[in-house]
Image (cartoon, rainbow, N blue to C red):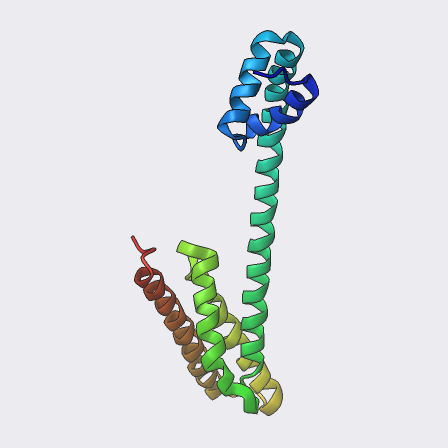
Length: 177
């Protein structure tokens, strides 16, 4: 077998440590470090330094990515719910038949077992929004409370419908329990 320079071995060590080197490259590195003490020291030192850095950096990176995705999803939920509720007294009110189930599906994906937080939040938010808006528009009357309740129940039902659809899709695509 041809003698391979230490520079080539040093280039191959990271690949061997990551497990992406071919079997031939692994064999060459292992054979070389048996006879070369300098490369063996580098091989062992690389393992210690690289494994510490990899575990620390990977955990931080994955945590930050998950955190950013979660925050983005929560913002989408909030913007969607506020938009849907704001459309209540307009000609675009019927878009809520699309918006609210989508919010329910997203809340099931984002919040997982705590999906119920979204329908409760939308119920409270829409009830308060409608009550205040109608009270400002036409003065306070006790019948406003019932009208606000009607819209809030519809929105909450649409969100729950979206959650049910998301659960059924999850089950249908084999990711159910």
